[in-house]
Image (cartoon, rainbow, N blue to C red; front, side, top):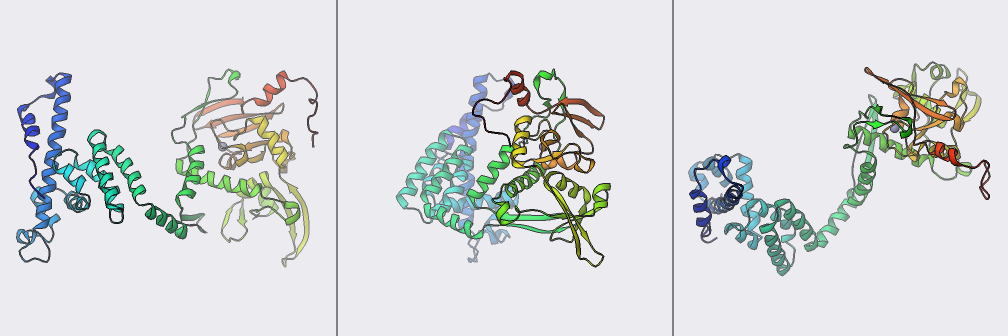
Length: 452
Ligand SMILES: [Zn+2]
């Protein structure tokens, strides 16, 4: 490292000429100049910080008995610098690390030491390029440093960091390939056993897997979503607002993951030939199911859940009664109560607007459950006039506050009541069916497929 600071004098003397100063008294032009002079002075002082730290480190070889750090009473150069500069241990270590990193990137080091770029910009470059520095082609590495230094003179550190990341990836394609191979080898997803009502999940996803999952979450879990939503359809006169969804983004992601898996299970091929869809079985007693109080059990786990979960599953997916003898023999298989068919689901989705019926909820129809508005056990038919689409979350407590649903002339209406807030019955969905009905000629159009 040679002499440092030859370009610093101009910047420092310009700054000192402006002092003392009360920024409030400056014109806009003077204030901008002062900010620029201050930034230049920072860059030069940063260069001196780096040069001095580099020299302290060079003189503090831990193997040497004449180590400067040891003579000052410290084990390492970083500890000596922390004491000398009264900075934090983290800050002192960062300085020493930067000295080491920049040794691999001489063009960047030179640009910092002569004050062309700041230490932040240099850290943004070296943080990315150092991964590639050991294996990259020397000429390519030099060109990359020069280009990034030129960018750093004009652009902010965030932009420099983004470009440096791209450059590092380009310089080390094999490292990216190796990382992808490692990710594929290490990928896993794990759902743990249920303990105290919850199961832990963990995993490592390769970049592409993560992009698909993240893309789905981003599409339907919007933490910047509107706080309130207007009741639909708009022609209802509605200035009334529905309350916001109070779930956290994390809770929404958990619910969405469940909805996506359930949707996939529903759409599996060939239930007629090969047995059932992938199905989650819940068992309970008829008495508990009808009273709404008691326990249910997911197949394959001994941990009980509230019977309401079985009621929700029966509402959307159907049920079957099995009569056991006291010794456990199956005495009788009851009728298989089917859930809504695919065709019924489509008709309901078309009628209600293609998302969960609850105002403001964006979970799409394909991921929703069909809910019997009048419960099956109370004689409600499994028919489009008694079915509405709800995401799992809005389905799971639809029979208690805050949301309630009823059908009026074949159109669903919702009501909200909770914590002092109440909205009276309103039609919901996007009104597509109403619009179609209003202008349509009677009878099916020529060539329309027959109803099933
Ligand atoms: Zn919903």
